[in-house]
Length: 255
Image 1 (tube, rainbow, N blue to C red):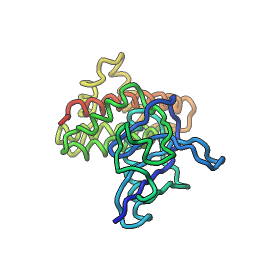
Image 2 (image 1 turned 90 degrees about the vertical axis):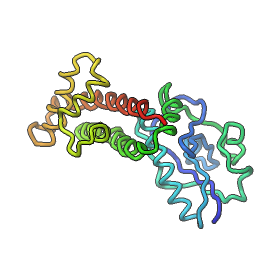
Image 3 (image 1 turned 135 degrees about the horizontal axis):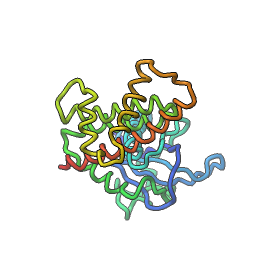
Image 4 (image 1 turned 90 degrees about the horizontal axis):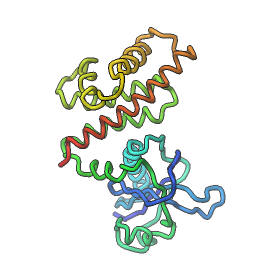
């Protein structure tokens, strides 16, 4: 088994420069590529132990992509790994022991030279809470934020809205123990978290009945511009509700 430093470029939209971000064992930071076609780019990096470079790239891709899902929650932005290239460095070519603290990260390899600030002001707090989530809740949360990420990444508001409701359904199923989560179960739980929003009942009806349910069962003209605009607005509102519900689930299930 050999140790490898694996890095994949990240595509999407980012905030101003600032501190690097750490999610689990993955670091997101700036790499200034000598190739002028790439220049300065954001990459996710991890050190791991695998038998060969192919296994290291496959495993590294999966782990960095999982960490990217967590950053999608904190930022609300569509972030994805580039599929066209990968940086891979054998253990004997980087300079220090495996360490991801602020004193050694920039000495691991010359290209660890800066970072982007990714996410809202609570990014570090949320990432810490994900780390400290109860062990028996980690799989549920991973599934739920996976749906949230699919919603954020979708340009189709109908698909996005459906994924946001799937994200919340995963949480409600865990809390209630109901295999089949019904509209009333969703509404009751959502009211407890976001019910202080103005016109909650009206908004829920727009998001669920007029948006998700109506489009799923073919009750609306999905390509009508007015309808599409309304569903797009509903998708945007549901995105913010879903984030609040996910953060509440984190808060309620700290180890």
